[in-house]
Length: 189
Image (cartoon, rainbow, N blue to C red):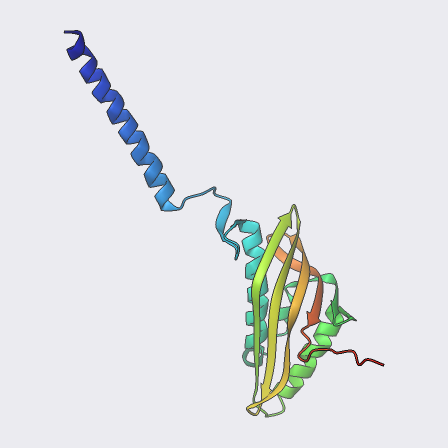
C-alpha cells in the first residue's frame, strides 16, 4: 500500500522535472539572450545594442560615401560627425571643414562630366561603449574610379571615438593610418 501511494507522487515529480528540462532546452535553442544583446562580434562575443549602433554608423558612413556620386549630398556624410570633430589621417589633422572641402572637390569632379565612382568599405569592426562614449577599431578600403581608371586607392586601419547625441552615435575623433603598400627596408651603411 505504501508503494502505491509513492508512485503517483514520483510520476508527478518526474513530469515536473521533464517539463522544466524541456523549457530549459527550448529557451537555450531559441538563441534568446538578454534584451541588450543583439549579435556577436568576430570573436563570437555578444555585443550590446549600443555597440551594434556604432557598427551600423560606420557602415552607414561607408554606404553614404559609396553613394555620393549619385546623391551628391555632402550632408548625408557629414551628419555622422560632431561639430567639434578632430581627426588624424596619416599624421595630418582634419576637421569637419577639411571634410567639407574634400567633398566639394569630389563634387566638382563629379560635375565635370567625367563619370566617377566611389567604393568605401569598413571591415573587422570592434566596438565598445561606456556610457555616452564609445570607440571602435576597424579596417577601411576607399577607391575612387574616374572614366574606368582607378584614381585613388587607400586602405588601412582606424580608431574612432564616438559621442552619443540624442539617439545617434557621432564620430568625435578618428585616427586613421594608411597601410604601407611596399615594405620599408633600411639600407645598411
